[in-house]
Image (cartoon, rainbow, N blue to C red; front, side, top):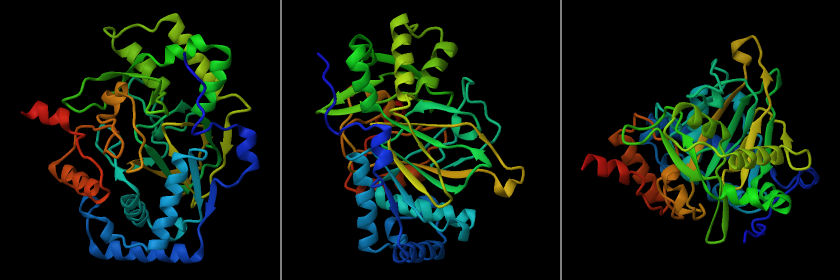
Length: 370
């Protein structure tokens, strides 16, 4: 028997509209501290994978502030918005170093695609969302509710669109419980494996698709890995994978509809200088379609960072093909791609050690190389 999820609790749109505790605005002192750390990091002239926490020296008070922000994503509502980063005063290169340096204090960055990029530009680059190799971050399209491939995703807002482009978030816990009240048979289906495409971004040692459940529970912790676009792509691109049953399609349709329900879906408007953190395991996100500015210097632009967290929850064994490691306090997740170098692996191992995290994510690559 499947029971409603009690902890962490789900939420409704009305609840988060009436409670602004999920927003934190930086103080002038905190901004000054972060800018000092940025100047120091820039002075080292080190590349991303040479930098360490020591190269971005923030005060203990600021570190504790951001640790509390991350902790709130693991409990509370599962997301947090930090406002007030002075992005208008920094060049793009400075923005990247700043965001990277801050991220090193919070977790281990994860690769995000075929090029093995560890920080992605979220902007309209003319991509096609529904293509078999499509990714939503490089389009202006409306995006379905989905989870990214890491414990947490951070979006640093540099510029907003001319119109549209609102962030939509919905509690997968609330969706699970709402579905359970009316269609427990379909909830059960979502605990079973589905085939997900890797969207052509797999590493040489990986298959182009994998199986994983949409819903799971491990040691009492709920997790949702829902990426409908990747499930659909697997059906189109790989005739050898199991076909979706009518019941599986109905379950996915109901999940999508439930996540988008007016009483559950929350619209979040971004401002330049916002940093949104989302726990991918319990909150799904989407985006409205947007119209961009004509002038390139004004076009919508965000920076995306994926992190494996030392606070990360245990994950079900069924998600191992997706995350490579499912144990808590481990480096896991990301889309490995084809450009993982020895320098990158050394950087990841060093950063994992700084956080006291296990580092076994390349076990399959090491087996292939043996």
